[in-house]
Image (cartoon, rainbow, N blue to C red; front, side, top):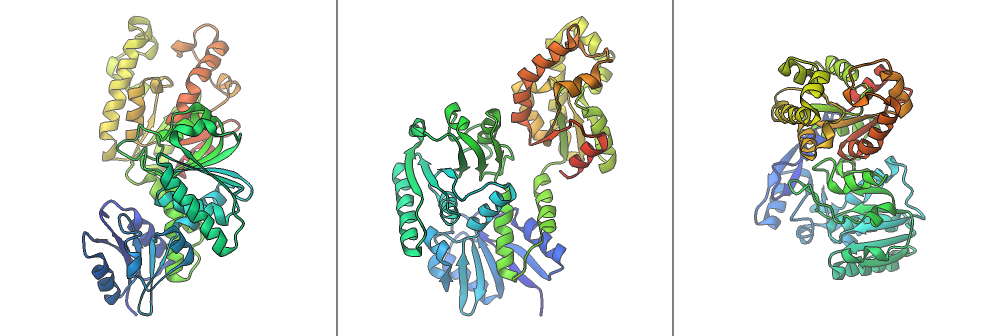
Length: 454
């Protein structure tokens, strides 16, 4: 038996991460198969028949064909039929059977994050394909209540009717389902919702937008998932973190829906260690840098040097680079030219680093105040995965008490440090892709966590 062929049908498909996922899994499991991209611009039905006759064993379907492909299938799995969209086709006698693995993929995200669905209150933002998958996942997971929020309440109401019909036909107990417009979020009365952001708002390149900026909305959340995974930290996620809400992007859902498709095609269970390997590859795809942020004393330079050495990457310390170029210490720069002059130097340095970061793997240790300027934050994100080395005031004081090269800590060191934690802590959290709590951890332990990002 020769190599089995699988692939993705859509328009466009060129930037898909699916080949990376599926071919990596096949390599890890030593299965003789290949995953290819099939760019289909027209004649969808004919092309599906051709691929079947050519022996393609399974296909993923992406935009804009998830619904359009259904009439050309031999059969459709009931949940996919209820949603009205498929993303996975498996070859059977006489054609393909269609499935929707977004449902199970999202469920596995909640399982991994230890978020209970049964008996919980949910908000689904959006009413398109991703929202339909999320809503039906919540139905089967026995959510207590589901509030559908969409700019067009008509689409949300249509989704609510589909959910009711599905419950009636399947015998599932229907949860409480409500519909709100985006301008009606103040009607929410619960105190602990789990939100699933299913719109395309915040997708690159329009990454500075969120579906809502309402502080009251975010304060009502206990956990959130944004199905968008590019950028890795969306504006929606930044706002969640700003208000203390734990959140994840859509990378996990992307991975798990693909794993589910793989399991349908091959009749195997993909081991969790293989899934973790693929997730690591997805997390670093397109990025060749790790940026360490945090207050003075967080351990950025020490951790950064050791991490760069382990990875055989270049190490850059923005403060050291500035001192080398100026021919004087940070203390002297502050004393002779003031803080504003130093911040200009910081911006020039991080901009330069961000423009050259793709050429080789780089670990960057940043000055504690670099994140204060908004333009610098965009340079950090462009440079690589931003890691906040978080530490308590007590831990930071132990590490820096005997140093004399901290211009912003002159005088009342403890008071100044507490003030900096209050003013910068939320900024570090908002800009970071990963937060590592370093209290009680050795340098070696922190470096090991950093290595797992690669």
